[in-house]
Length: 124
Image 1 (cartoon, helix red, strand yellow):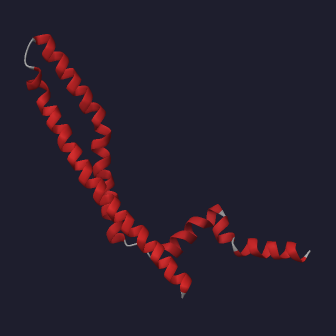
Image 2 (cartoon, helix red, strand yellow):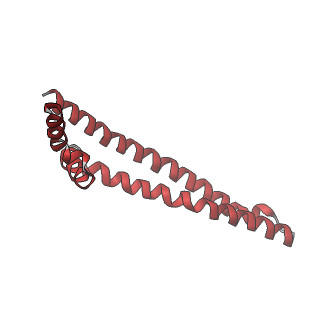
Image 3 (spheres, rainbow, N blue to C red):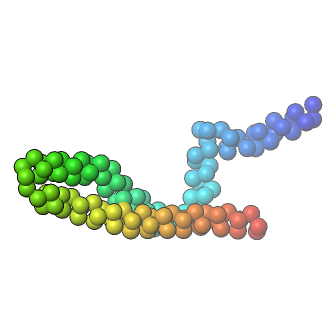
């Protein structure tokens, strides 16, 4: 009987974590003090910057293939038709590389701050 009462007490004490309706607010309150909005906002913007060109790559590839077919059909140089699309894809690749790298660096800094803040609090 004592063990059952003890387990109920533990369940009550952890309700703010185990209850899905309360867990989000609890984690936001407890871990939010370690996150720096000055890092999170630019990281999210950089994620948006690399997500948009990534989703457009299928369209770029289809446009390149269409230009190849049109050039082959009309007898003009294929390179003249596809050069612009190749350059756009190369530019987007560089943009994706830079934006994703910077976003991951910023998000790792946020994760590091959360872990270090939590450890500092635990060991005090």
